[in-house]
Image (cartoon, rainbow, N blue to C red):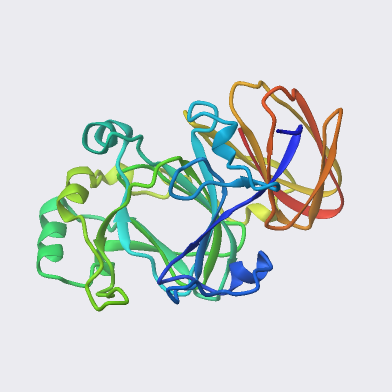
Length: 313
Protein backbone atom coordinates (compact mmCIF):
# COMPACT_ATOMS: atom_id res chain seq x y z
CA UNK A 1 0.00 0.00 0.00
CA UNK A 2 1.29 3.45 -0.93
CA UNK A 3 1.58 6.34 1.48
CA UNK A 4 1.70 9.95 0.34
CA UNK A 5 5.51 9.85 0.44
CA UNK A 6 7.30 6.53 -0.11
CA UNK A 7 11.02 6.09 0.54
CA UNK A 8 12.52 3.50 -1.79
CA UNK A 9 15.12 0.75 -1.77
CA UNK A 10 17.10 0.53 -5.03
CA UNK A 11 18.30 -2.33 -7.15
CA UNK A 12 22.06 -2.76 -6.87
CA UNK A 13 23.83 -3.21 -10.20
CA UNK A 14 27.40 -4.52 -10.13
CA UNK A 15 29.72 -3.55 -12.99
CA UNK A 16 33.26 -4.30 -14.09
CA UNK A 17 33.96 -0.54 -13.95
CA UNK A 18 32.24 0.11 -10.60
CA UNK A 19 33.79 2.12 -7.76
CA UNK A 20 33.71 2.30 -3.97
CA UNK A 21 32.10 5.66 -3.20
CA UNK A 22 28.52 4.66 -3.91
CA UNK A 23 28.58 1.62 -1.66
CA UNK A 24 29.86 3.82 1.18
CA UNK A 25 27.19 6.43 0.52
CA UNK A 26 24.50 3.75 0.54
CA UNK A 27 26.00 2.16 3.68
CA UNK A 28 26.34 -1.22 2.02
CA UNK A 29 28.19 -3.81 4.08
CA UNK A 30 30.06 -5.03 1.00
CA UNK A 31 31.13 -3.36 -2.22
CA UNK A 32 31.60 -6.57 -4.21
CA UNK A 33 28.96 -8.86 -5.68
CA UNK A 34 29.05 -12.65 -5.89
CA UNK A 35 30.78 -12.41 -9.29
CA UNK A 36 33.44 -10.10 -7.84
CA UNK A 37 32.32 -6.97 -9.66
CA UNK A 38 32.09 -3.75 -7.62
CA UNK A 39 28.92 -1.70 -7.24
CA UNK A 40 28.46 0.49 -10.31
CA UNK A 41 24.84 1.66 -10.16
CA UNK A 42 21.85 1.90 -7.86
CA UNK A 43 18.52 2.17 -9.65
CA UNK A 44 16.74 4.49 -7.25
CA UNK A 45 13.38 5.05 -8.92
CA UNK A 46 12.57 2.36 -11.46
CA UNK A 47 9.94 -0.04 -12.69
CA UNK A 48 12.27 -1.38 -15.39
CA UNK A 49 12.40 -5.21 -15.17
CA UNK A 50 16.21 -5.22 -15.27
CA UNK A 51 16.37 -3.26 -12.01
CA UNK A 52 13.13 -2.31 -10.24
CA UNK A 53 12.97 -0.25 -7.06
CA UNK A 54 11.14 -1.42 -3.97
CA UNK A 55 9.04 0.03 -1.20
CA UNK A 56 10.53 -0.35 2.26
CA UNK A 57 8.28 -3.39 2.88
CA UNK A 58 9.83 -5.13 -0.14
CA UNK A 59 7.00 -4.62 -2.63
CA UNK A 60 8.05 -4.03 -6.23
CA UNK A 61 7.34 -0.45 -7.32
CA UNK A 62 5.92 -1.77 -10.60
CA UNK A 63 2.93 -3.06 -8.60
CA UNK A 64 1.76 0.53 -8.24
CA UNK A 65 2.89 2.44 -11.34
CA UNK A 66 2.41 1.88 -15.06
CA UNK A 67 4.94 2.79 -17.74
CA UNK A 68 2.81 5.82 -18.62
CA UNK A 69 2.80 6.99 -15.01
CA UNK A 70 6.54 6.36 -14.52
CA UNK A 71 8.24 6.62 -17.93
CA UNK A 72 11.60 7.63 -16.46
CA UNK A 73 14.34 5.96 -14.43
CA UNK A 74 16.68 7.53 -11.86
CA UNK A 75 20.00 5.99 -10.93
CA UNK A 76 23.31 6.79 -9.27
CA UNK A 77 26.48 5.79 -11.11
CA UNK A 78 29.92 5.38 -9.53
CA UNK A 79 33.00 4.69 -11.66
CA UNK A 80 36.48 3.40 -10.98
CA UNK A 81 37.17 2.92 -14.67
CA UNK A 82 35.86 4.27 -17.97
CA UNK A 83 32.47 3.11 -19.20
CA UNK A 84 32.30 1.92 -22.79
CA UNK A 85 32.12 4.39 -25.65
CA UNK A 86 28.44 4.03 -26.43
CA UNK A 87 25.22 5.47 -27.82
CA UNK A 88 21.50 5.08 -27.17
CA UNK A 89 18.75 5.00 -29.82
CA UNK A 90 15.92 7.49 -30.25
CA UNK A 91 12.28 6.49 -29.86
CA UNK A 92 11.68 5.75 -33.54
CA UNK A 93 14.67 3.44 -33.96
CA UNK A 94 14.14 1.75 -30.58
CA UNK A 95 10.50 1.04 -31.39
CA UNK A 96 11.28 -0.33 -34.85
CA UNK A 97 14.34 -2.42 -33.92
CA UNK A 98 14.01 -3.22 -30.21
CA UNK A 99 10.25 -2.78 -29.55
CA UNK A 100 11.17 -0.31 -26.82
CA UNK A 101 11.34 3.40 -26.14
CA UNK A 102 14.59 5.24 -26.77
CA UNK A 103 16.92 6.76 -24.25
CA UNK A 104 17.72 10.39 -23.69
CA UNK A 105 19.39 11.07 -20.35
CA UNK A 106 20.92 13.79 -18.24
CA UNK A 107 23.72 13.75 -15.68
CA UNK A 108 24.40 15.85 -12.60
CA UNK A 109 27.89 15.28 -11.19
CA UNK A 110 27.82 14.68 -7.43
CA UNK A 111 31.55 13.95 -6.96
CA UNK A 112 34.64 13.82 -9.17
CA UNK A 113 38.33 13.14 -8.67
CA UNK A 114 40.71 15.90 -9.83
CA UNK A 115 41.05 15.77 -13.61
CA UNK A 116 38.13 13.35 -14.06
CA UNK A 117 35.91 13.84 -17.05
CA UNK A 118 33.53 12.49 -19.63
CA UNK A 119 33.62 12.02 -23.37
CA UNK A 120 30.57 13.55 -25.02
CA UNK A 121 30.16 14.37 -28.70
CA UNK A 122 32.52 14.21 -31.67
CA UNK A 123 35.47 16.49 -32.31
CA UNK A 124 34.98 18.99 -35.13
CA UNK A 125 35.21 17.45 -38.57
CA UNK A 126 34.62 13.83 -37.57
CA UNK A 127 32.19 12.21 -39.99
CA UNK A 128 30.69 8.73 -40.29
CA UNK A 129 33.25 7.49 -42.81
CA UNK A 130 36.25 8.61 -40.74
CA UNK A 131 34.83 7.22 -37.52
CA UNK A 132 33.77 3.87 -39.00
CA UNK A 133 37.29 3.37 -40.41
CA UNK A 134 38.75 4.03 -36.95
CA UNK A 135 36.34 1.51 -35.45
CA UNK A 136 37.15 -1.11 -38.09
CA UNK A 137 40.88 -0.54 -37.59
CA UNK A 138 40.41 -1.04 -33.82
CA UNK A 139 41.92 2.36 -33.07
CA UNK A 140 41.77 4.16 -29.76
CA UNK A 141 38.63 6.23 -30.36
CA UNK A 142 39.26 8.97 -27.82
CA UNK A 143 41.00 11.36 -30.29
CA UNK A 144 37.71 11.50 -32.19
CA UNK A 145 35.66 12.46 -29.11
CA UNK A 146 35.31 15.65 -27.07
CA UNK A 147 36.60 15.40 -23.50
CA UNK A 148 34.96 17.50 -20.78
CA UNK A 149 36.61 17.79 -17.38
CA UNK A 150 33.95 17.69 -14.67
CA UNK A 151 33.41 18.90 -11.14
CA UNK A 152 30.64 18.54 -8.59
CA UNK A 153 27.51 20.38 -9.70
CA UNK A 154 28.13 20.16 -13.45
CA UNK A 155 25.21 19.23 -15.72
CA UNK A 156 25.18 17.43 -19.07
CA UNK A 157 22.23 16.42 -21.25
CA UNK A 158 22.84 13.39 -23.49
CA UNK A 159 20.26 13.25 -26.29
CA UNK A 160 19.66 9.93 -28.03
CA UNK A 161 22.22 9.46 -30.80
CA UNK A 162 25.05 11.19 -28.92
CA UNK A 163 28.37 9.39 -28.55
CA UNK A 164 29.54 9.32 -24.92
CA UNK A 165 31.56 7.61 -22.21
CA UNK A 166 31.64 8.43 -18.50
CA UNK A 167 35.20 8.56 -17.18
CA UNK A 168 36.68 7.04 -14.04
CA UNK A 169 36.56 8.66 -10.63
CA UNK A 170 33.06 10.10 -11.06
CA UNK A 171 29.83 9.76 -9.11
CA UNK A 172 26.69 11.16 -10.72
CA UNK A 173 22.94 10.99 -10.75
CA UNK A 174 21.35 10.05 -14.07
CA UNK A 175 17.75 10.74 -15.02
CA UNK A 176 16.73 8.96 -18.21
CA UNK A 177 13.91 7.47 -20.19
CA UNK A 178 13.06 4.04 -18.78
CA UNK A 179 15.06 2.08 -21.32
CA UNK A 180 17.99 -0.29 -20.97
CA UNK A 181 19.20 -0.14 -24.57
CA UNK A 182 22.89 0.64 -24.99
CA UNK A 183 24.99 0.09 -28.11
CA UNK A 184 28.70 -0.26 -27.30
CA UNK A 185 31.10 1.03 -29.93
CA UNK A 186 34.37 0.43 -28.07
CA UNK A 187 35.19 -0.86 -24.60
CA UNK A 188 38.85 -0.05 -24.05
CA UNK A 189 39.75 -3.64 -25.07
CA UNK A 190 38.40 -5.00 -21.78
CA UNK A 191 37.40 -8.62 -21.38
CA UNK A 192 34.78 -10.34 -19.25
CA UNK A 193 35.67 -12.53 -16.27
CA UNK A 194 35.87 -15.56 -18.57
CA UNK A 195 38.35 -13.80 -20.87
CA UNK A 196 35.94 -13.08 -23.73
CA UNK A 197 35.88 -9.55 -25.19
CA UNK A 198 32.83 -7.55 -24.13
CA UNK A 199 30.10 -7.50 -26.77
CA UNK A 200 29.99 -4.57 -29.19
CA UNK A 201 27.08 -3.35 -31.33
CA UNK A 202 28.83 -1.54 -34.17
CA UNK A 203 26.19 -1.86 -36.90
CA UNK A 204 23.32 -0.58 -34.76
CA UNK A 205 25.48 2.17 -33.31
CA UNK A 206 26.43 3.42 -36.78
CA UNK A 207 22.75 3.47 -37.71
CA UNK A 208 21.99 6.07 -35.05
CA UNK A 209 25.16 8.04 -34.25
CA UNK A 210 24.59 11.77 -34.75
CA UNK A 211 27.52 13.39 -36.59
CA UNK A 212 25.79 16.74 -37.27
CA UNK A 213 28.10 19.59 -36.34
CA UNK A 214 25.42 21.59 -34.54
CA UNK A 215 24.53 18.47 -32.51
CA UNK A 216 28.03 18.13 -31.07
CA UNK A 217 28.31 21.44 -29.21
CA UNK A 218 28.17 22.55 -25.58
CA UNK A 219 24.90 24.30 -26.35
CA UNK A 220 23.30 21.13 -27.74
CA UNK A 221 24.34 19.19 -24.64
CA UNK A 222 23.05 22.05 -22.41
CA UNK A 223 26.29 21.98 -20.42
CA UNK A 224 26.10 24.04 -17.24
CA UNK A 225 28.78 24.37 -14.56
CA UNK A 226 28.67 24.59 -10.77
CA UNK A 227 24.92 24.29 -10.35
CA UNK A 228 25.41 23.25 -6.72
CA UNK A 229 26.53 26.83 -6.00
CA UNK A 230 23.35 28.35 -7.48
CA UNK A 231 20.82 29.05 -4.76
CA UNK A 232 17.21 28.16 -5.49
CA UNK A 233 15.64 25.96 -8.14
CA UNK A 234 17.38 25.29 -11.45
CA UNK A 235 15.39 23.66 -14.23
CA UNK A 236 17.72 21.07 -15.70
CA UNK A 237 15.73 19.47 -18.51
CA UNK A 238 12.20 19.41 -19.86
CA UNK A 239 11.56 16.23 -21.85
CA UNK A 240 8.43 14.45 -23.03
CA UNK A 241 8.95 11.73 -20.40
CA UNK A 242 10.34 13.76 -17.48
CA UNK A 243 11.08 17.22 -16.14
CA UNK A 244 14.11 17.65 -13.88
CA UNK A 245 14.95 20.42 -11.42
CA UNK A 246 17.96 20.71 -9.11
CA UNK A 247 17.04 22.58 -5.93
CA UNK A 248 19.59 24.05 -3.52
CA UNK A 249 18.38 25.34 -0.15
CA UNK A 250 20.26 27.04 2.65
CA UNK A 251 17.63 26.56 5.36
CA UNK A 252 13.98 27.35 4.68
CA UNK A 253 11.55 25.50 2.42
CA UNK A 254 10.17 25.10 -1.09
CA UNK A 255 6.58 24.41 -2.07
CA UNK A 256 5.85 22.21 -5.11
CA UNK A 257 2.46 21.98 -6.84
CA UNK A 258 1.77 18.57 -8.39
CA UNK A 259 -0.53 17.68 -11.28
CA UNK A 260 -1.01 13.96 -10.63
CA UNK A 261 -0.49 13.15 -14.31
CA UNK A 262 2.88 11.50 -13.81
CA UNK A 263 4.86 10.13 -10.87
CA UNK A 264 6.88 12.67 -8.87
CA UNK A 265 10.22 11.60 -7.37
CA UNK A 266 12.59 13.32 -4.96
CA UNK A 267 16.26 12.36 -4.52
CA UNK A 268 18.38 14.01 -1.83
CA UNK A 269 21.93 14.69 -3.01
CA UNK A 270 23.43 16.58 -0.07
CA UNK A 271 22.42 17.31 3.50
CA UNK A 272 18.96 16.13 4.49
CA UNK A 273 15.42 17.20 3.73
CA UNK A 274 11.93 16.82 5.20
CA UNK A 275 9.18 16.17 2.64
CA UNK A 276 5.73 17.13 3.92
CA UNK A 277 2.24 16.46 2.59
CA UNK A 278 -1.04 17.11 4.41
CA UNK A 279 -0.84 13.65 5.98
CA UNK A 280 2.84 12.82 6.35
CA UNK A 281 6.37 14.03 6.96
CA UNK A 282 9.26 11.96 5.60
CA UNK A 283 12.96 12.64 6.12
CA UNK A 284 15.50 11.81 3.42
CA UNK A 285 19.25 11.80 3.91
CA UNK A 286 21.82 12.21 1.16
CA UNK A 287 21.59 9.53 -1.55
CA UNK A 288 18.08 8.50 -0.47
CA UNK A 289 15.02 8.63 -2.73
CA UNK A 290 11.25 8.74 -2.48
CA UNK A 291 8.27 8.60 -4.82
CA UNK A 292 5.05 10.53 -4.26
CA UNK A 293 1.57 9.08 -4.52
CA UNK A 294 -0.25 10.32 -7.62
CA UNK A 295 -3.17 11.93 -5.75
CA UNK A 296 -0.93 14.25 -3.67
CA UNK A 297 -1.30 17.78 -5.06
CA UNK A 298 1.14 19.78 -2.93
CA UNK A 299 4.46 19.15 -1.18
CA UNK A 300 6.65 21.23 1.07
CA UNK A 301 10.34 20.36 1.20
CA UNK A 302 12.33 21.93 4.03
CA UNK A 303 15.78 21.78 5.59
CA UNK A 304 17.50 23.11 8.69
CA UNK A 305 20.85 23.41 6.89
CA UNK A 306 22.24 23.49 3.38
CA UNK A 307 20.88 20.78 1.09
CA UNK A 308 20.51 19.83 -2.54
CA UNK A 309 17.85 17.63 -4.05
CA UNK A 310 16.59 16.58 -7.45
CA UNK A 311 12.87 16.95 -8.15
CA UNK A 312 11.56 14.91 -11.10
CA UNK A 313 8.05 15.06 -12.53
